[in-house]
Length: 281
Image (tube, rainbow, N blue to C red; front, side, top):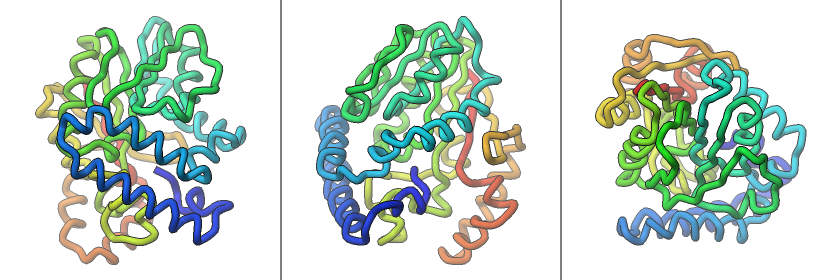
């Protein structure tokens, strides 16, 4: 997910429209594909997106040292309490792999899982890091992962593949392992490029979730406990999930514009946006 500022920075209105039209076209192919077709389409379509949209924010961010450092710093402040020196770390949707490279300094082994190698193909990798390509649902890494982490990934999965991916993550976790999942909250979406043009996601956010919906998937997969975290600027604390679910229930019934306005304000933004859910095996 990118903020509105990141999306429009150094880009013209025509470039935003071009990005939107291309991503909507490619996402439509993925939405309408069969399960078998999706096994190879994730990689193909994301590679095509980055080739056809050279001004994509993710490619721009790759070349911005300061922005990358800030992004990694904030994520590491949240992740550090979960990391141990002898642990195996798995990042789902590793992208440019910058976070995984940083985590690799603090753990025994780090894996980066992604559907595309396009964005990280020219980057030098630490010796204890391995990039593994996925079809979008499978998680082909050795079992024994202590910490699995995804940030802005769940929403990119076809709804039919989301449960399968979470199940596969659960399967490779160590018995006391955790899965940390961060995803945009559907109630103030959309959060992909279509936010500038539509009221529902039509780009590569194939489905956005509430905390309640994500919690349902985690518990159905088999996680013994789930824990929500709230806060901002890298400082997050555990927060009762039932309160978040009650807030989401109340907001769902509001008109779109009223809901968006409320969720942009304190304290709802700090409590609900984005969803930060930790599943404990």
